[in-house]
Structures are given as structure tokens and as C-alpha cells.
Amino acid sequence: MSAAPRSSRSTTPAPKQPRSRGRVRAGAVVVAVANQKGGVAKTTSVASLGAAFAELGKRVLLVDLDAQACLTFSLGVDPDTVETSINEVLLGQAEVGDAVIECAEGVHLLPSVIDLAGAEAQLLGRPGREFALRTALEPVLGDYDIVLLDCSPSLGVLTLAALTAAKGLIIPMPCEMLSHRGVGQLLDTVRDVKRLLNKDLEVVGVLPTLFDGRSAHSQAVLADVGERYGLPVLLPPIPKTIRFAEAPAVGRSILTTAKRSKGAAAYRQVAEGLAAKFWPTA
Ligand SMILES: Nc1ncnc2c1ncn2[C@@H]1O[C@H](COP(=O)(O)OP(=O)(O)OP(=O)(O)O)[C@@H](O)[C@H]1O
Ligand SMILES: [Mg+2]
Image 1 (cartoon, helix red, strand yellow):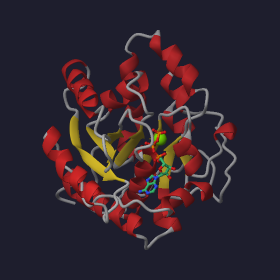
Image 2 (cartoon, rainbow, N blue to C red):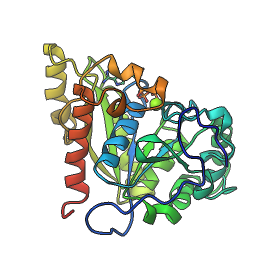
Image 3 (cartoon, helix red, strand yellow):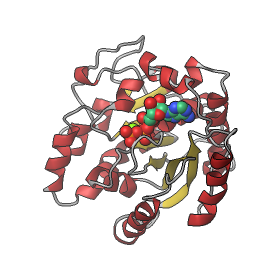
């Protein structure tokens, strides 16, 4: 594959990432970041948590499952220049290793392209379509500690494929009025996926995003969210700050563009909490 980097990155094939600190582990923890509501910070969370896990010495693969290719773009890769993408991987026409790109901040990316919408339509007619991602990722799971799946704002076949491939689900949710609408439907889908496709799937938690600490309303939504659905809440909440808007334009996450910002610190803390959960003995 070849993707003309917009930023100073090496090109493919991406070399294997160095072993993470601590024990050598059997295979990556695969985590889907999903919410069918648009604009809740799924992509921002995948890019930022990915960079935070890499800072912790973890080998990270980020997977762009959205035909808008926002994650691909925000990691400094122009989707128009990607020759081998998640598209061919899902359709069984390429191996994951042929498509993976090494990006800045020490993360690897399985990129998307606008054609992914076409791949989704093709997948629909295929048997075992929900298993396409799980099967495709299997050969590289030993090369990574964590794989984060950036889902599109829908509960379509690609999100089902992500939930089938994943061990955990993180649900980003803005601390705004009515932002929890639709979570019930997502949890119904999780129940069906567990019953029919992937009994190991667990909701890791709700990740409060776009949090305005000065607003009593934000505080009230945060207090309500976990209780309402009986789900863990991943803390601290991610503050709402303009610094997030700047990061994708330079192909880096906020952890690089605004290293010492509150937003970067919050994602680092969430990643540390998740690391303690995923690798308790590390
Ligand atoms: N904590 C934050 N503070 C301010 N702006 C934010 C924050 N997190 C994300 N944003 C901005 O909100 C917008 C939506 O974020 P993002 O693209 O990550 O959401 P998404 O859930 O992936 O959207 P989609 O459903 O379209 O895929 C972006 O412009 C992003 O820069
Ligand atoms: Mg997105």
C-alpha cells in the first residue's frame, strides 16, 4: 500500500511496534468506541486514547471504520492517497498488514477511504459479514497491546462487525441535555451481539465528553448517566475545549498539539485507568 503522508511519517509496511513495557502478553485487547449519535467525540477519543496508550508504552492499532475517514485524516493521512484500506481488508482482498500505516505519536492505523460505504454495501450480501473484522484482525492481534475501533454514527453492519470483534465497548457521551437518547438502543444491540455473535463483549463504560465543569447542567447529566443505565463511568470527564478543534488539522492528537492542556491530561488519566483494568499485573 502507499499513502502519501501529509506529515512527517514513515510509510508502509509499518514495522512491528516494540514490545510494551512489562510482561509479554498473548494478544491485543480490542475495544470498540461506538455511539450511533453523531459528533459525540468517538473519533477524538480514539485518536487521543491511542496516543495516550502509546505514551504508556503500549503497542497501539487504531481502526477507522467510518467512510468519512475522519480518524484517517486526523492522523495526518490523506484518505485519497490510501491504496489499501480497511475496505479491501474487510472484503478479504488484502491482509491487515498490507494496509497498516505507521503514524506520528507511535500509533499504527488501519485507514479508511470514502469507498468504505461501497464495501459496506458489498459486505451486506455476504455470509458471516459480522465476523469480517474479527477474522481480519486475528493475524495481527499478537503484534499489539490494544486495538481501538472508531465506529461510524450508525448501528449498521460495520458497527455490528466492530462489536463482534471487540472485547470491550466504550460509549462516548457528551454531558448535554438528551445526549443519552439512543443509548438504550445501543445497549439493546449489545445484548443481541452478546447473545448471537460475541458472548465476550462487555461495556467498559460511558466516557463523558464535552464536559463543561462550570455548568450545573453538565454536572447533573454526568451524575445521572451511570446510574440510569447501570454502567461504569470512565473518569475524569473530558473537558470541552477549543484545543480539540485544532488538533486534526495538523495530523496529531491533542496530546501533542496541546500537551499540557486539561483535555490532554483527562485523556491520559482515562487511559491510565483503562490500562489498570486491562493489564492489572503490568
Ligand atoms: N472535548 C472537546 N471539546 C471541544 N470540542 C471537541 C471535544 N471533543 C471533540 N470535539 C469536537 O467535536 C467535533 C466532533 O468530534 P468527533 O469527530 O470526535 O465526534 P464523532 O463522534 O467521531 O463524530 P461522528 O459521529 O461524525 O463520527 C469535532 O469537531 C471535535 O473537534
Ligand atoms: Mg467519528
